[in-house]
Length: 262
Image 1 (cartoon, rainbow, N blue to C red):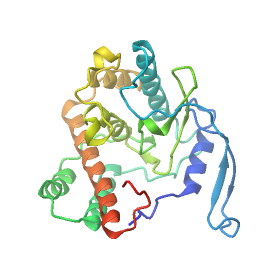
Image 2: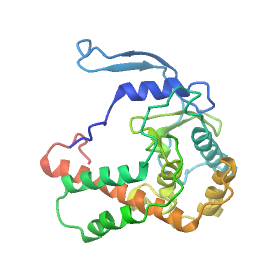
Image 3: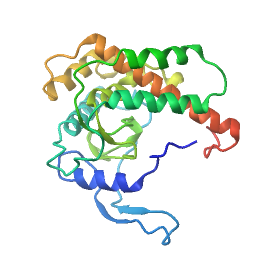
Image 4: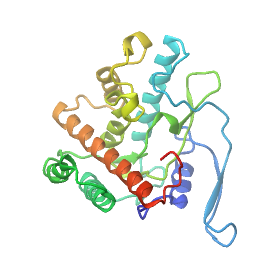
């Protein structure tokens, strides 16, 4: 089962076009074709970006200083994205401007229920708990929706991002939700899902979760981030990730998974 908004290339074209020149590195867009008769589906053309895609968050084979610089640039780029003026770049109406978390919890709860393969009591409890504990003071920004390391292209030899990829889940929403999803890497192990929990971060030159969050808060002008609220954002994103993985499991069971290793 695919979400109704999945793979909406028109939206992806709109957001990368809008962000070009804002300080958020994106591939340059050239044209959008919405005529399905051309190749069988709407499509757009963007520039080829030549660089490095990194998969292991511990960045094996790199020097301590390079790892530190790479994580600092990731933090900088995300803070820059969340600081973009929605009105200035013409993205007013790119998403609804209220009740983002409420709508996301409902969306992923429905997705999980539709993809269930066996009862999981913890997920059922979260479906009840999450809507009742949504933090107050929700803010709005352009959010990417899938800020994983492998959705970034780095310069061939320099520790800097030259393009952020895969904008199909982007919308207007709470930037802390977006950043917390990105920071699951610090809380999950490599075996659980491409994480680096239990790694010797200090020895590797990678900032701790506390340092990294503090740097983001400073860059975005947030004096403090309430620890209890931050825990909620992490819990919600664990739930969202579980719902995504459950959807993959369901497609495997149904024999419709596109990836042979799913």
